[in-house]
Image (cartoon, rainbow, N blue to C red; front, side):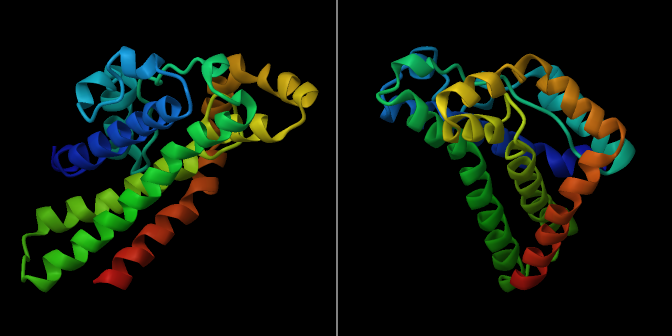
Length: 205
C-alpha cells in the first residue's frame, strides 16, 4: 500500500502529460483528431487504461520494484498532418521530451523540499519516484519498437520504402516488449535510467 501511495501521483502525471503532449503537438501540426475527442487535456481520466496504467504498473512495482505499463494511446490521423512523415517525428518525440522535463521538475521539487526543511519521508519518496517514473517512461517509449514513440521516430527518419516495411512490425510490438520483459532484457536496458534518476536526486539533494 505504501508503494502504491508513493507511485500513484507520479504515474498519473507522467502518463497524462505524456499523452496530452502528443495530441497537442499533432494539433499544432494540422491534426485535430485528439482535440476533437477530448484527449488534449490534463484530466487523467481521459488517458487511463485501467489495466495498463494502474493494475500492471503498480503490481510490478510492488512485486519486482520495476515499472511497466501503458496508457490509452492518443489517436493521431497521420495523413492529416501538414507533412506527415516529418511531423510524425515531432508528435512522437513530444511524449518522451515532456517526461524528461517532468523528471527534472520532480528533482527540483525534491531539492526545494529539502531547502524548506520538509523531512516528511512520504513527500520525499514521491518526488524521488517522480524522477524515476518519468525517466523510465522516457526510456521505454524511446525504444525503437513500433508502436512506441521510438518506433514512430525511426519510421519517420527512414526512407519511405523502408519506413513502410519497418512499420509492419507494429502489430507484434507489444509481444516483443513482453518478450524483452520476460527475459529481463528490458530491465537491463532501462536500469541505467533508474541509476541516472538516483544521481539526479543526489545532485539536487
